[in-house]
Figure 1 (tube, rainbow, N blue to C red):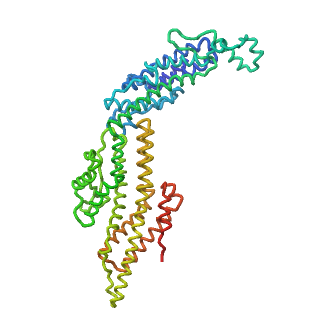
Figure 2 (figure 1 turned 30 degrees about the vertical axis):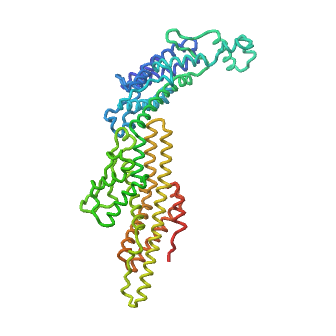
Figure 3 (figure 1 turned 180 degrees about the vertical axis):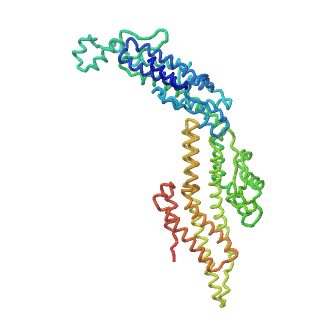
Length: 543
């Protein structure tokens, strides 16, 4: 054993590799000695194994209790990335990394993720100036090594209460010769003999308090049961303390709810008021692209129920490289200044995705707003100057007006169906699913993953990813037709132009309906069946 350990130590310069190799060799040797040299070598190797594990457990104990890694010889299996500060959005995933050293002692492999998770939580609690609590409810008080020794000794000596079993029942204690005669299976005979011998002696070491387990009981389950539960109990405690701090003191859920209310228009009445003011300025040709005015307008609209978030919000116009180009809705961006440590969950990348969905929703709302506010009194007489007879002019003008009214009704139905699908089937169902995941989360990593999955999901289902570009472009074409109808409603249009608008709408309606009816889109867009049915069964016919 010593020769094997020294050969590895002389061939590598990494102390972590050396210590993991040492632990692995001692553990494997103890397992072999349990079978070959149970009475002599096994207790000694068990004692060496416990002494070799003690520095590792002391490092873990100090880290999970105070958030400090004391590792002067670089033996610990976890490294801290000093280039990542606690205020960095990548803190949770990048600040600590596990070494990929092999071989690793088998019963320590499942512990590393729990240790890493607990250490991250303690680190954040320390930065938040929250004193992490000692574990005294989930596992016994004292150091982790002491708890490990006590549990191992209790389990090793308490799995089979041999003395109580033999003395409290009418069991005839047979001799070794009788066992061989009565039990034909040699393994069962060996087990019964071990139980009989264990009832007459106690193999407890006086200097370290570690009880040697039965000869036929495997070592690995004892080690795992002795350590996994105390360590995971402490990890759950610090993770719960961090979540309570984020929810109660940092208002994490409130920030997520605020962004949903604004960027995803969950507060429909408040954001509807802001959009209406913006759409009216666009319709009348007023100057609307002043960032300060837009920010004040937004804050005034939401102040009745969300006045506490005013300091986090601002509206900017992201124009292209050519500054002289007039701004439009696709340039509008609502910024949200996410405070630390909430920015570990709501990153700038997620804010970008939120704004992408917001701009798409605003374009849909603008199309509905423009069509809904068309008045029949304002319907302009169509140009029929090429017809000389007054009666024919009147009939042709009325016919074109009627066709324009029907086209408006088709557009309203199409856009309203898309809006209802996104707001109800996509966003509302996603809100409910995220709320359930946040409620069931047991550590910050689950919250970060759930929120990231939520953002990516709505970004995809709102057709903002390249996979949905063909559908998004078709819907944008319908919105463009709606804008042309609004202009024609006030200024009139020629027959050729009306025919072209009708043909374009029919073509895009049929295209969207046909695509939504395919199985591939159903797998890409959950709950799209309602929108598909609404468009397929109302699809206009071609001439």
